[in-house]
Length: 153
Image 1 (tube, rainbow, N blue to C red):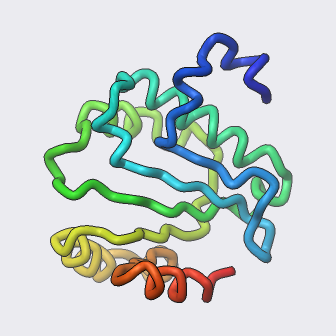
Image 2 (image 1 turned 60 degrees about the horizontal axis):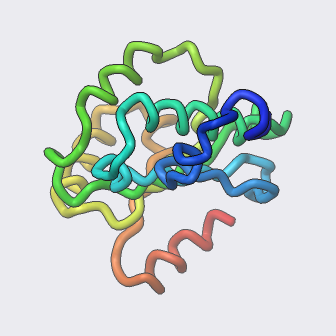
């Protein structure tokens, strides 16, 4: 899929860093690497535009057969304030849950606010062991975060 194809005329939308794919780069096991930056939700794009860019970028991430088989690794950059997000966008995303064939190999949450760390610890207690072991939280100084992430490839 290229810009000239499905997303022709949407160059402004595609310039958003809401969802970014490390194209041509994968982890040692061949999983695609995706960055989801929730801070972009406070920008100028509409819910529909954010949804379109996310859908397109996930297609790009899954363009390799190895990524389709092994899944993607998602790095999430969270909002500082829970109420700054767009709840309508998440409701729309939840309505299509299960329709997009994408395996989540791991979630790496980078520099979350302290209340999110607490919520993640509680949520991990409620999750099964397989899903619990796929969620990682990285915080501290930039050197600490990079050192923590370097363990994963």
